[in-house]
Length: 388
Image 1 (cartoon, rainbow, N blue to C red):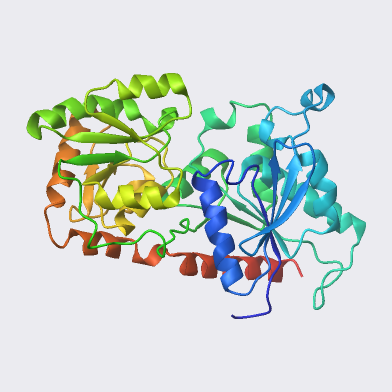
Image 2 (cartoon, rainbow, N blue to C red; image 1 turned 180 degrees about the vertical axis):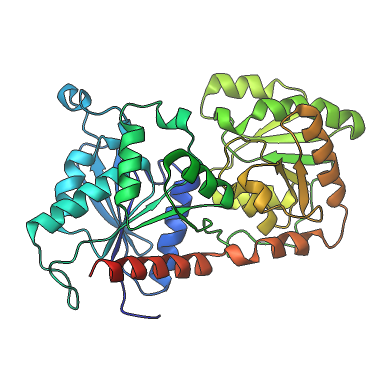
């Protein structure tokens, strides 16, 4: 470790087991890396309970605050991910740790307000820090926001722009996301790809792929941005060339959607909330598909490659920066069912290649938790140095 241990405070509006999607998994992996490196991280988040809870979960101190639902509060809040801020602000102002690291737009605003309040209080800083020093703020933009997204909720555009410009460091997940943030908000950012748990998502040469060609859709099918309808449109085209091809779809929470998907010829619903089940699904699939739009990175693509399974995505999106060779997957040139089907057929052919597992694994070898944590800590220390 270079330098003394740090006490970073991570901010995300929800956390697992309640939600286990991209930013929640990124926070957990970063926390694991920080703990392994000897740092003392804490997370401030929210939960549907009526009382605050304080737990240490695998070395991470997790504070879960209730989501206040009073009508008076809701007249001033548009985004429900800010429902715990009234309780979080005084807590963070009193003890923000060495750096505040926000992973969601509303939490970016909270971090800036908490840092300002803490500075105004004149609380004595840890040994070696000037008591007049401001607590640095790091904002991680976990998606490639466009203007339509930014103006969809009252105050989101102004809040995110103000917070990003007040932050000491802004990070994005890919060149695609970096360029989008610059074009949308005129904010410069550092590219820090999300961590991939290469110890959990591994190649198992003894795990046989399914007998029939199998495509895995491991994302949330209820998310419109994931565009599962394109995949459903491509499936019959694929099945004409590869009869018996199955599409495994992550089971949605909505029972009506689950019934509709299960009724599609060739579709099988699978439960992927459990990590071992997800790893096994990656290993046994012939290819993983992510036909999404506005995808900043594509964590399921990276996880699939880490398990030795080729991946398919669209050009012009973040996953195209991971699948950079036809040796590990295919990038469809345009968002149509026909183009996607052609890419899927190419990826399915790779499953018969004896060396594809090692090539896929090698494509993400630099995206592990260790390198991600080291890069993040480097940015923390740089931000702290600038605020002394």
